[in-house]
View 1: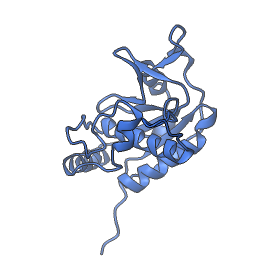
View 2: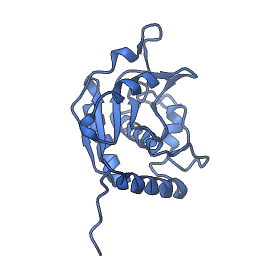
View 3: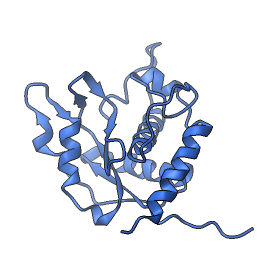
View 4: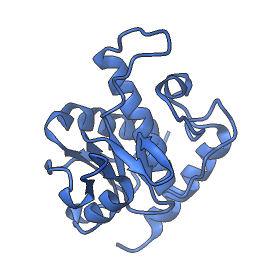
Length: 192
């Protein structure tokens, strides 16, 4: 069997807040394990103050992405920033993560991922880390131009709450998996 060729597309994972280091390591491990892409945890940064909405006490996800896009991140083409602050977009009271379709930077928030499940059961750190990995892989899918999938058995299916996130598998459907593979292959052929 010939050795597997490592794609030239790398993914940076940035902890943006004090408690985000372990979550960033888990996200990087999932990117490597599930997507077979090289990933590395970059130096931590504070959450972008310019994205903090003083009235909502939440970070505007779109503005946070813009702030992070101003950084070079060692020239990596795709970056996932793991934040501890609560994120919102104008049409939702909160989001777990956000990315622009085909963009370079995604943001993921730990803030609401420790919420109890529908039955009121406590959520341990293992479940929080699984949730952040799912959100990060979903948002990375958007960075590679995947849209939301209608298949509830696909990680690209929209999950608006923690219960939906818990039901989501840590897998892409065959269509999203193929599209993602093609997108990664296309990105690795692009000049740096």
